[in-house]
Image 1 (cartoon, helix red, strand yellow):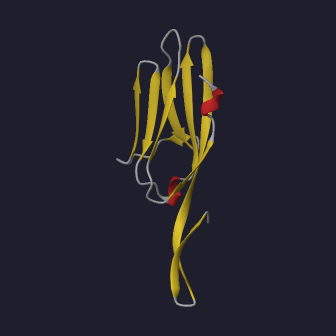
Image 2 (tube, rainbow, N blue to C red):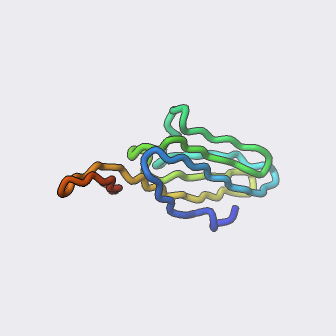
Image 3 (cartoon, rainbow, N blue to C red):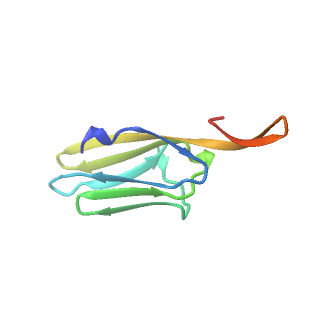
Amino acid sequence: MDKQFEEEVILKVGQSTAFEIPFKGNPQPKVTWTYNGEALPQEKRIESETIYNMTTLRLGKVKRSDTGNYTLTLDNSAGKVSITIKLTVLGMYLCCNRGFTHKTYVKD
């Protein structure tokens, strides 16, 4: 697995994304996605899919609570390797200034 996929991603509330990670391994490795070291949240808008030599994690309509570390671990008899994708979801607030309303995106 190429470490080039280890990155920091910044999204705005309501956006969607998919992390597609190709890999090789013999024997075919067991694929595990985790969120902040725990199992992925059981929500319909968060799903993982793995086919031969490719795994995808899809996040639909992200929320600020989705901010965190998404870790992919590949494990077989030859060893174990992991990469982590750090996701930051910026929240949206409406701000009023001198009669004008505009949207501002902030972390916290």
